[in-house]
Length: 125
Image (cartoon, rainbow, N blue to C red; front, side, top):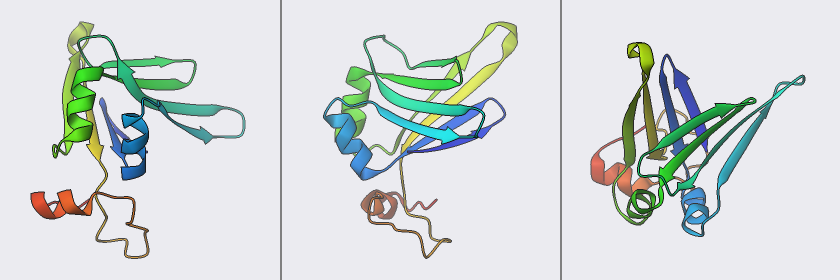
């Protein structure tokens, strides 16, 4: 799973093998070790009616409602996109996508990406 961040925006890209893991009910967890601290980010299902994000103790957790996640995992939809509004007028944009192959990094292993969806939607990374 890949994480891309920009001002008030996060994007998670999920590989084919990770989609299969989510289908089996597993939570995806990635860690980045900075030496003095570890940043962890995860993606998994929730029983709440809306996408939920939590940042606590150096860990970012993104939770997708189980029904919405199941439909996304089993369908041809590329992603789930939501905006969370906070007090003070701030908005967090959240995008969770199936990972497409990158055409500019030719040496990258593309076997675990969604080439068929990229072709169908005429999209690349």
